[in-house]
Length: 358
Length: 267
Image (cartoon, rainbow over all chains, first blue to last red):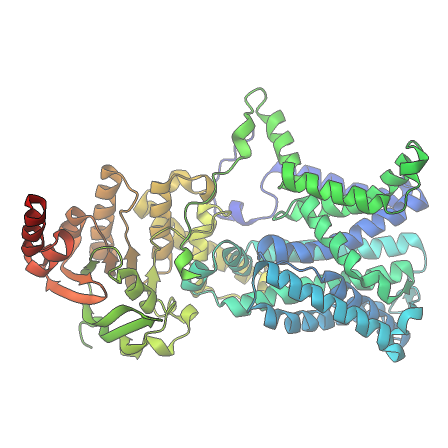
């Protein structure tokens, strides 16, 4: 068990709280930098996807995990980013500028969705965003002049001011840079007043308001930032796949994204990354398992959907804090061995809320 | 500048057929502890919710430092220097005590989203300044031991204090306390009385509270307003109000009622 002796307020503000974290995150960074030489081409591609989904997951985590607003239409923001990137790079705009534009346009769309979202809560918000997802998917299919319709559209390798990132390794590093920057940005927001305002809105709107937090402004801001990150992720996704069509941004993609943050651990930044790893490795695991299962089950269509559904139900029932919560428990168990108690992470349910105010 | 900080005139609010507050008027003077008492359903909390703009009055006005509160947005009330606690505790459950108190500093923030995104040196300085203010409140209310704890794991009595601390972090001029002693044991109630006196004496904050514990009310209040069924019954010092026949009737029933009851029993 580590006890930190605090002598300055700065110790609570900085990102790495102690030497152990510095060491492990530096080790992780080194491993990620060395990844192109450690992994085969196939696994490097999978790692690139993990990074891309992490960026999208960070955005959705900020919205759902930290602001308490649920979105079942996040694939739409992913799509807006992807199509913006495709359209702009075709015009010869350098990829980094197109990437920023993809983020900005997604954010603008996020604000538009955020405005009606201020009036609806909980399940109704989920339905509203679901409807928004369908509308956007339809726009992608119909606006053929820009999106190429259902036939899809090709997108070339990213061009960083004349430098073509046309191989897997260079594109992997581009994704790594974007992911690190996005993570730092989100962490910075969360340790300052904006992030605290999001958390306040998540936990009690009425008292957030009486603390002087402008609910409408911060909810819209949360939607905008979340959509921007999804858009940036979408732009990278488009480059990675080199081909996008409307059906990649449908309801199933949205559900995958929600699954990702719930399984990863809602309300924790680590959860976005663990969820992305889960989402990318799961199809591989299912693919491997197929060979060992009886043909009736193994070759049945929809096996993946079934497994995803079961995993989601299992997490909601047995580990609502997701993979990250499981890791925290394991770590605590090892740190204080043999004093771990079963109920240590159980929180008392909240006392009576002022229902009259709602 | 007058010495009246907040004044409610002719305040009424109607929910459908229920007249929750009926033509209530009172003045809260700068630097006093003013208490609203009354049986359940008297409309005390409704008055609080009118001041913090959760409800809009059907008629009448609330003036605070010369401003009509009905013209302010709900989130601007805190900026004007009015902070409140809630009857059933509305803390941010899944955040630490420290974070809860820092949220109380929201109206004093000086940084925008962009500088926070890059965590500029200015943001760092602002964070440390906010922390220093929060630490003063932690010292005042003896919350050092709970600084890092999650609110969700704290006992009820401590949560009450954390909520008071969070309200103090906004540096209010007027503090609204909705039943500060409910759910507290005798010892904690004594602490609460001590703190309310301290808040008034040391920080110069005017306190408007709703309270049922008459011992606490008489100990800390300068003036008391008794309400029943949305109407003002009596106003004055705690002693005057306690002896007012209307107040006794509201709590205990009238002598006639008792007499009539006796007759029925006898018959």
